[in-house]
Length: 293
Image (cartoon, rainbow, N blue to C red; front, side, top):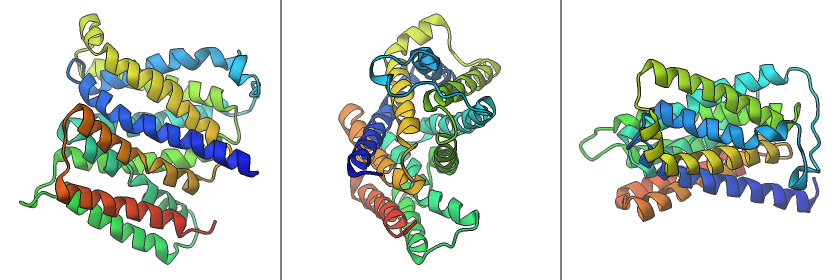
């Protein structure tokens, strides 16, 4: 890959991380009016409507990406959508029991988990990865475990979400090379949206017109920017990026989440929290920079 493409790919992934990090605030605010699965369903549907025309139309900035027919698109897209559904809703429900800052940094642990999952697939685990795991575990302790040794319930869900996000990053890296990136995005959003609507209905969450209207701003931010723009940028950018390289750039998501939580919600991590966050970021960097693949 030439240097210009490397820089443009990195810029797209950094923009993706910034949008994702800021969206934690919208996710928190949206649940003031609607349930967690209803919020996910609404933002997924909005994002889907935004990019659905790109299934066939590729004018303007998309002219350089003509539709590419491929076998297995619906199968692979449905798998991605199912994984996305689990990851994003664990994160969403977890926000009911933790802060935006904690959610952002704990979610970022998938950066450490990506090389570990690659190792489980048969690749040797270098010493740097084990050092990264140690740093991240220590950081998670200081960030999530309170002085009285309790852990916020939402932090456990965010940790589970991080595992699923790691799987999603690896799958995107594989399938974005096999299929048309934009069509793949359409299929995964469709599946994730449908599953979220079904669960929201089964749980009888508040999701009537008045509730959705009250949450319209948060839904628009989470749907148009985070789903319609950021997740599509992820799929497009990762056609040319190694999963571990992508993961280290996405690790800045936690920093953007913490800044958003401080600026909009008035959250404060404190010295203990920032120390834990710094250890987690250090673990992310070690896990990725220590690899030679």
